[in-house]
Amino acid sequence: AKIAGVENIYINFINEHHNVPEYIKNIYPVNHFSINQEVVNKMREDILTFHVSDIKANVFFNVFDEGSVFDNCLKFISEKQIDLVIYRKNPQFPDSTGFAIKLVRRSVCSVLVLTENFSRYNNILVPVDFSSHSREALETAILFSKFANISKVSLLHVIEHPNISNWKTEHDHEEFVEILKKHGSKEGEDFLKECQTTGVEVDPIFKVDENIENGIQKVI
Image (tube, rainbow, N blue to C red; front, side):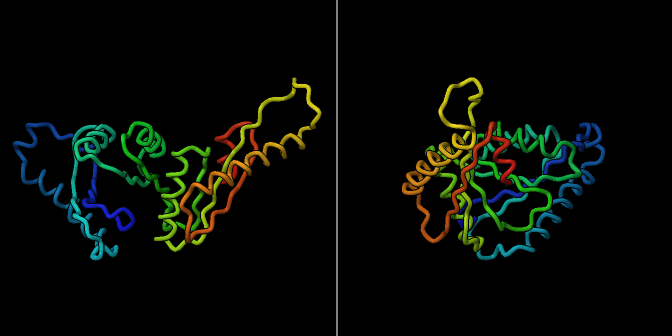
């Protein structure tokens, strides 16, 4: 909120397993309301543990106790024109990882996924392919690092190793890997010149792997 100067923060609780039939609501409307109010009160208590007094933003608490968790999220994002969703994986929630992946893929806005053991940022890794999107990701990470008092951000570029087993080349495997790394390093230098990195050290990492995703996972 401090970084982006946001106007509104929405704290949402979505309970997929509280689909109450309409006739029960008519019989016990007060009891149904008390469940929602209890959740809102708990969320208010939790949020007060953070230093929110110096954040110039409106904070709203919402409870959704009917329908699909995922559908409710996407609908809310669209209706409120949300710019950033922050989701923390919960080991007690079935398929929490799968839910996070779906949210990232289907959401129309940026999504920040926190692990269940998240406490604070210490190390930030930004995988890049030297595109304009990568530049925006790196500059966002630098903003995060400044507010979290992190002095260094790691930039990772994984170079996909082509299968050259059937190629005729004067270089052996090790030499070919070094050539790829040098080429990636030169691209990285040119890329960093275009980025706003003032005040934070950027540590470039160049790896060669047969699969880009696997290369990223190995560094993590």
